Image (cartoon, rainbow, N blue to C red; front, top):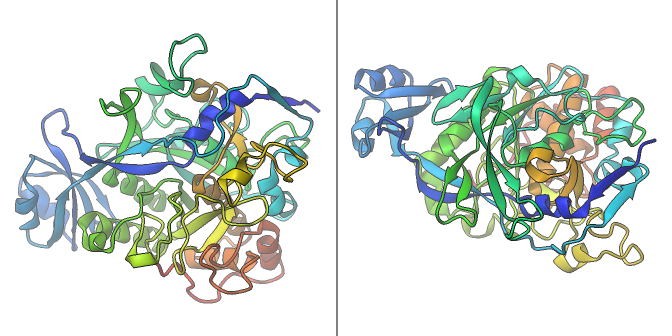
Length: 500
C-alpha cells in the first residue's frame, strides 16, 4: 500500500479557487474581424433568416431556438427585427472569480501522509456510501461531461476514464478539439518568486484544447469519476462513478485583464456555456456537470435574453435525456428571498445542488432556498468558518483541511497531483457521478426519472422539501439498491420549481 504525501501548501493554493462564481465582466469582446457575439432567441427557422440578413450564425442550440450570432457592434435592434426573432442581445462575458479564501491560508511545508485515502481523506464518499454502491454499479457505459476549466490530460487517476478525443473547447461560438499550440495556463508562482504565495503566473504550452488551464475542472472531474486501483487499496482517488466515461468540455480561456490581481483572468461567455450544454445533449451524454454559476440575480433580470436562452437550452437538454447537474452557488444566500435566483441552477430542469459538511449540516458558504435546492451533496467545510478552521482532531471529527473535499488536481497548474477544495462546485459532481450509476442500472430512464431516483435515495430531509437540502443529502447506496430492488425513479415530475 503506497502512502501519499501531499504538500499542504499546494493544497491551499487550490482552496482559494474552489468556490468559483461567474463574475460579470462586461459585454463579450470583439472577434478578430471586429464582429461581436450575440445571443438570439426565437422560433423555428430563425437561423436561415438571420443568415439571409447577412449575419454569421456560429451555433444553433435547443433545436434552433437559440443562436450564437456574430455581427457588428450595435446590431441587436436590427437582428431583433428579423421575422421570428423574439430576443437579441450582445452576449455577456464573465470571469471566473477566485475569491479570497474564507478559511485558513497559513503557509506550511508540512506534508500529510495518508496510509489509506478512503479512510483518512474521502469522508464525502463515506457519508454517501459510494464505495458500497460500487458493489452494485460503477457507472460503466455512462458518460459525464465536465463543463469547466478543462481536465488534466495526464493525471493517472483520470486517464482510465478520460475520453481524450471527445474533449472539446467552446470559445467564441466555435467548438475546437485536438492538440493546440500556445494554450494559456495559469500556474502558482515558484517559491523563489518575489510575489504573493497565491498569485498566478502564465505559461504558454502545447496541449489538448480541452486540457485544464486553471485547475478547477480537474478537481471536479475526479470527484465524479476518478478511477482508483482494483479493490481500492487507497492508492488513488475514488470517484462516485469509477467506471464512467469522463469528458472535458472546456469553456474558460485566459484574457489579459488589468483589473485582475495577476493581470490575467479566466473568462467565458453565456453563449459558450450554453453551447457546451447543448453539445452534451446532442451527443447523448448522461450528465452535464456545471460547477459554475452566476451570483444571485434580482427578479427583474428574469426576462433578460440570456436568462431566456438558459431556459431554452437546459430544458431542451433535459428533454433529450441529459441530466444537468448545477452547483447552487457559494454566496450564503436564500435564493427564495425577494425572488432572487442564479444560473444555471435555478432553471427548471437543472438539478440544483447545495453543499454539505461531514456532519450533514449545510456548509457555511452554500446558497439555499425552498424550491431552489433539489438535493444536497458533500462540498466541504462545516456550518461555520470557525469550525471549518479547527485543525485539532480532538475538537472535530474532520479537522482542517480534512473537512474539505479531497480529489485530483493538475500538477501543471497547482503544483501537486491531489488537494482539498470546498464549494458547491465540489457538491455538483457527486450528483453527476450518481447519475452515471443510475443510468447503468436503468439505461432507459428519462432525465426526470434519474433525478427522481436520486431524490428518493436521499436522506435527512424527512421526505419534505428542505430549504437547505431539498429532498435530502444524496446516498449512492440507497439509490442503487432501490433500483436493483425494482424501482425506476418514475414517481412523477419533482423537478426544481425554482424562480424560473
